[in-house]
Amino acid sequence: MLPFFIEKYMKDILIRHIALLSLFIGFLFLSSCSESGRKKPEVAVSKLPKIMLTIHRYGKALFEADTMDFATSLKALKKSFPYFLDADLDDTANVKKLYDYVADTQIIRIAKQTFAIYPELTKQEKLLGSAFAHLKYYFPNYSLPTVYTYISDLYFEQPVIKQDSVLIIALDDYLGPSYPLYAALNIPRYKTRCMQAKNIVPDVMRTLYLTDFKSNRRTSTLLDKMIENGKLLYFLDAVLPNFPDSLKICYTGRQMKWIEEHKQDVWAFLIANKMLYSTDYMAINELTQAGPFTKGFGNDSPPAIANYLGWQIVSAYMQRFSHTSLHQLFKMKDAQKLLKDSRYKP
Image (cartoon, rainbow, N blue to C red):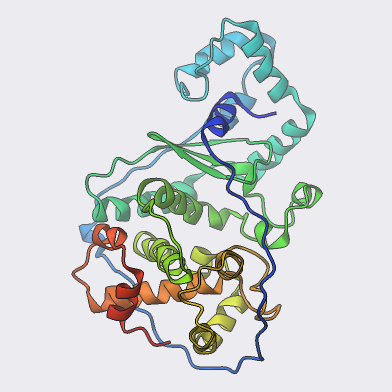
């Protein structure tokens, strides 16, 4: 059972999750190579706007409401959380729907465990406030959303939602990879290891990019997809300068080491097999979608290795053309020209 606002939201979105398909190509054993440095965007702290962020805890307030006089409690909460409680609370059916939600034994258990892990959100407010300050530096006219948290009943398909001026974080989607109910739901390990407290801020900023900054133009080739995903990762470089790359792309330390050591070989493979301009849907998915690894490159490889290379290409371009703003970067349509101008060589 989902809260009102989730039901409303799900009516407006298209399910985009597609099962990973098998890649038809194999790959020879890869040799090691040295890592080349990657310059990241930097902003002096003195130039950042001051952002005092408060994360509003709707979920905690809802589960602390007096269920003995639930309708009255909800009406009192509505003043602080109108987005969530926009239904007619004089209608007993609406009140009962919410009551059934907060009285559900499994959801109560999830809520209690979530509040135990997150008794307060001071750290998240500080980190997200810094990310928002960087975002406002690059996009001064951007209106920052009001941030809320809630208990989603493990709605892991979309842990962060941005709609209009509101951003909502499902805290119960960040209880750590060993949380037993994740396994009970058969959530893959490669997903649950990215469901930790340290992933909240990168996920928030990723969601803001996808909803408010990403181009809607169609990508037809692997290179198109690589560059578009590279723009996202470079955006995360800009707004999360103190976060490790592994969190931005959700790789383990071993996976980061693998791709840094083997990126020359991966790039050579894509060139030799004329993959950059391939429009093969299956091949593109295997090289750009999440998973435990990239099929065809061995179980030690990270997933979505083409996204990593796209990230390096965009970074190389921005290093050569440092006058280019993020807004200008996001508007660029010609992936081939960007690659050529970047002079990227792993």
